Image 1: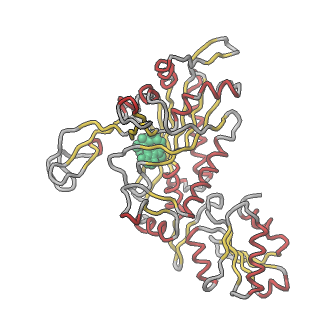
Image 2 (image 1 turned 135 degrees about the horizontal axis):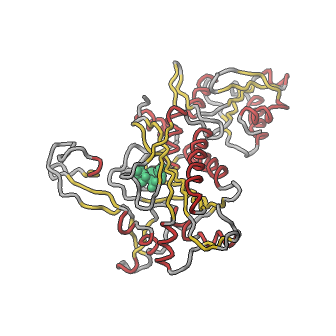
Length: 427
Ligand code: ATP
């Protein structure tokens, strides 16, 4: 099993993920994505967006993080989005009561306080006056933005059921026990799709999206042996759900949820209709009936997916450590090297790098032995390296080296771009 400390240290050393506000000693459970981390994250988001928002019948949305406070009353978050909290009277450590098996502190054996419910929403104030009338919340999920825009999207695009709304955006939860690096944080990013369906077709679409979402995780290269479904039993179901399944991944610290697929029935739209006083019924042209659609939701955490991709890709081999990312996720796709630091070799390496253009991220490196440069790229998961040597100046060909097989191939400069694209799966 991969050691989390090794992964965290690699992430810091190579510029994937830094602790937030590090020069001030950091802030608990907040992380910053560095130069490579932001590329990886954007690649994950791009894969999700094209697979979900670009499908026929699904459209994108970018709703605001701050919403009318009544949204959170209607959704049930004000009344019910809470975890049971207990404190240790002796060492003062804090725990989620539902995660404890004993009645005493797991850290020091001390006595625990009475259980109290702790609402996970972050509260703040809108405008200059800090009183109860100006309270707003940082959204704990992106879903509600899609529900309150259901009619806007449906009527502007003249959508017929079934249709979907896809969103990627930040969400905030004041988690009692954040941890495991970026697995559980208080600020995180979600990629959610809400699919509005005829009520009698809910089970069919639930199965459809369950399969589609598993396919997506396999498509970005995750190991099938580390993915599984977990069906929610009656006890586990959220207040809004008729049926729910998680896609779990076997993280270095065990099997855990990465994505949830939920049949939310007509709960959300019915509640928003009641709380807003606006009709959210859908008029069915075929049957001439008006009804509230059911919603099948697919909700995946971007940060958790990124952690799964990192742990899945990490490999230690005899003389190197490698991140074997699928090419679609690799932050840097190709690195260009002159064999040694001679002006004519450097110039050709730069020229070849320029010929790729800005379609994907490339890097130029002339520092250290060629072997060390390969290792550096292996460690950040670059699938291909191109080396220019003295022969290149006369035979107009270069060496292309594959990260996983470490095999080297001589390729003519004229074909280089198309060969790289083919190897990267871009053409
Ligand atoms: P959990 O049971 O782990 O708290 P959840 O069931 O409350 O998660 P959902 O509300 O279904 O999660 O949110 C959808 C997805 O958002 C989750 O599958 C997860 O990937 C991500 N997510 C939720 N909470 C967090 C968090 N605190 N940090 C990072 N990602 C999160």
